[in-house]
Image (cartoon, rainbow, N blue to C red):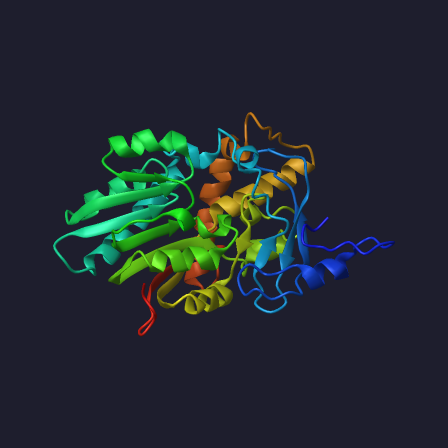
Length: 331
């Protein structure tokens, strides 16, 4: 049952009722309709079925109800983000490409010292990379919910705040803020963007990476546990148009936009289909990212997506560089 659905005596709520009461976390409009149902096919953290809704106004997809009180359950100890040292060949190639992007952004920033914030940065491994790319990076900060990462991050020389970014407070202002694979995990993406805007220098850049719902695999696997749902950990999902709209509403301009390969989503979608047929086995002890077929599928689909991108295709992940809009209010 939708958590926002009011009960009418003598009548059970139906999909139409839910659609009139479910409020979009991006544009705040009601009138969303059920889009797809999905389960945790990757980590088997729950047997529950979850419902994604699509906003009738802006097209954002969102989970409702959001499992905000089940974080310890849906992010198990073997969650891939907690194992940053376990890198496949495909991940290493991706990291090299990401380093080129970061080097370009850093080279465009002025000043003798630069400060960088990584939201959801875990033990700070990405900030280690950034310090190696530009000697001017003098201050690095991690904001993350994982208390186990704090000791490692501090040992690497990074400041660490354990908690939600919405609750993060500092006098520091940052020249670069990383929001990599994070904004889709929060219940109020607009609040996150506005919070980060207050921590940004006038020349600052926010680099966002997030799934793209306007993609081939998102359409093919809409009703078959699309990997981009990352259910139930992805709560709000965008395409280029509605993310740009949200960014503008939060006081930002999109300086640069690009699509990038969504191989993990393809790999998850295909493995889920094989698991439904009983051809492969995924368990809580050996989640999908540790299945021997996963890196093979990911490598193959990475090449497929990159080839499609050269021909004008729109793969299922996107990079967005945000800068403060001219004349936007700063506090």
